[in-house]
Length: 204
Image (tube, rainbow, N blue to C red; front, side, top):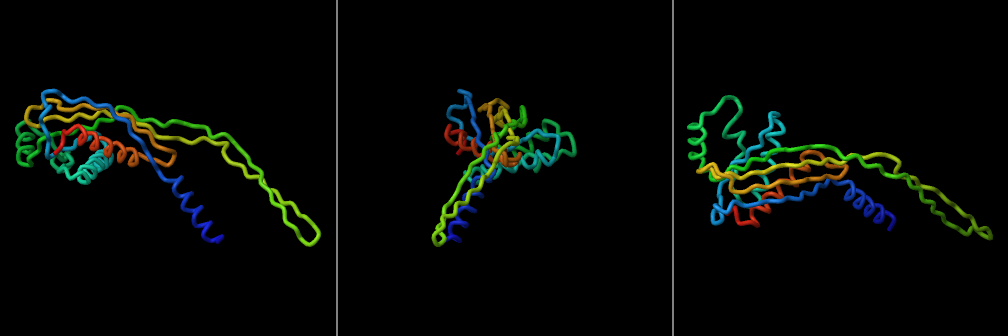
C-alpha cells in the first residue's frame, strides 16, 4: 500500500511541475472575405533569428496538420539567403497553391516576477509503546522565494495571397507558468489561433 501511495504522489508531483501556457485571443474578420475559406497556408514568422523563426513556424505547422489543413513554413519556400522580387514571390506562391499568408509577429515578451510567501506546517503523531505514549512532531517549510513566469503578446494577420488584403486580424496574450519556456508559449498560441480560424470558418 505504501508503495502505491508513493507512486501516486510522484504522479501528482509531476503533474504540478508540468510546463503550461494559456492564450487569450481577440480577432476580427474582413467582411470582404465573409464567404472565403482558405485551404493552404504559408506561415511567416518575421524573426531575424533563424532558430526562433523556424520554431515558431513549425509550431503553427504542427497545429495546422492536426487540424487537417495544409501549410508551409516560409523558411522552406523563401530561405533568407537572397532578396525576392515581387514576380518571384508571386510565382512561388502560385506554384505551391498558397491561398492564405499567416504572419505571426511578436509585439512584446517579458517575464513576470512573483514572490512565493514562506509558509510552514507542523504535523505530529502519537504511538503507544507498552505503557508509554510517545509523541513525534516535525515542521515542514516552503516558499520564501521568487519565480518568473513568461508573458508574450502577438499580432497575427491572415492575408489573401491573390489580393494582398488582410482577411483576418488578431491580437493575443499568452502567459505561462514557472516551468514554461518560449516553445510552450508558441504551442499555446498556435493551438488557440488555429482553433479560432476553424471556429470562424476561415479554413477548410
